[in-house]
Length: 346
Ligand code: TXA
Ligand code: MG
Image (spheres, rainbow, N blue to C red):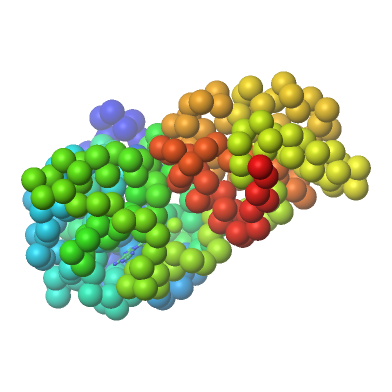
């Protein structure tokens, strides 16, 4: 374990040397753990795909130590992207931009664009700084599995496949960066994440020539791995979407049915919901924090899914936490965890 407040320079120097030598280093960011390699070395980047079992057509995010380095990997950066970078970097926003030719096709899955972000974590910064290179890194989980929020999660998924794991303790946001595409004149939300869409829209609206934040996938951006099953635990996930009260009641009824059928069930719930679900005493309760505290719920979501999975439950019951703010990213990840079989209640 490395102290994130004053990371050991010798460890970072060794990690940076491994990156320069084409090896894989897993490292904490403020969102989730990443599996990093030299972004300018196609062979090193191939090792990421091999270690994760990741589909070749799913492009990677290029991580940079500082905003000024964006010009090293991207070109024609629009005013909108500059404003977003100024507002949110270092931080959990990823911006897709037209790529420079020095970025290998392996990184971008052959796309003419590259996704970049400047992470806000002292160990990630220390690694980028020591390597002196841009680092391509997806989340450090096996493909289709839940993103890792602790070093132990990385060990559980990838173990020996990684040359070094930098343990910086649990990550703070616990959910991936928000991805926007600014490569084609407009700005489009590709993946809701740790920066709420409302905050991005606010920055774009304040521009001298305001730009709307478009939602939904365009034909142009639909390709890269975004529609696939993702973030899936082994247990069956029953995800109830709708107003809190109705969703909680539907969850309770489904839980009772599952228990009556002899299934082992896990409840992924916020604190105040626990009281009204005591009829499900036989279930395993995994609490995510106060129902109104979305940052806390997001930060504990993946670890909660992994804990219930490891406990060997057959079914995980969970409800929506609203579509606003971080709720949108939570809703997106739970929809994927449920393999798109969302149970809508009104
Ligand atoms: O918080 C995060 O973003 C973490 C940490 C490690 O930085 N990384 C992460 O990477 O979540 P990954 O590979 O699990 O997700 C990257 C997302 C994918 O949905 C991918 O399709 C999208 O970014 N992406 C990457 N390059 C793209 C491009 N050129 N055009 C459109 N989407 C792109
Ligand atoms: Mg991922």
